[in-house]
Amino acid sequence: MTSPLARRRVLVTGAAGRIGSATTTHLVELGALVTALTNVAAPDLKADRVIVGDTRSEEDVATALADVELVVHLAALPSPGSGTPYEVYTINTVSTFNVLAQAGALGIDRAVIASSINAYGGPYNPHEVRPAYYPIDENVPADIGDWYSLSKQNDENTARMAWRHWGIDVVSFRFPHTNSADVLRQQVDAYRENPGNGVREGWAYLDTRDAAYAIELGLTASLSGAHQFLVAADTTNAPYETEALLDAFAPGVPRLRRLVGREVALDLTAARTVLGFKARHQFDLPTERLEI
Image (cartoon, rainbow, N blue to C red):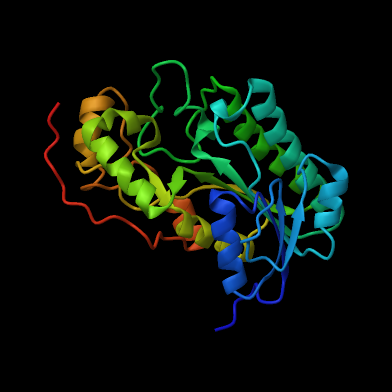
């Protein structure tokens, strides 16, 4: 069956990045015409149009948006340590504002942007915090203690503004740790040795191929407005029962429902019901006994 994205021109920013390259390949395989905007030379990108430029530059983004019908904005510095605090915050927020403002002003109907599970502030918080409850959902109270998480929270604010001002629908994905299967399998071993390290993000993970699939759904879903979705594999990347992990590392945190087996400690209801998302690449791990 022909994809609704076939022959449609899609801009992917950050196209040479981890999620960006997987998304570019996936969209091309669906028949989309992809304009790739990247800040580094990337001769292996599958896009039919590649622009080397800066997402903070009005001129570069305007050039990249020529003839574009849909936008996927993934360009960002990916952690607090990716640059100075000033660099991380300003590059991320200015880039998102520039891309969404120009796309909205052109009358483009839909954009998908990379937010992060860090938009609630937990994983990189310098204090010994826990989420307000499990499973973590899109409405969990925020506790922002770092500039990267602040940038992602404000990227979502920019998405809401762009929708209200220009009417562009924006889907923001709160990605957890997203990587190749090989790297994610290394994380399994790390969590086996130090399982408490995953408590602030519910031991969630996502294969880059599933991130690209989620982006496809975000571009094609029947919705309007500015929406945030948590997306992750259904199960954790730790070889222990989730309830046992929570008993050990978040004993005082309320649980809104029981988590069965290795079920991820995120509420994926919104992505499942609104977008029809279900991760296709998950680890079938044997469940081990947690010993602390």
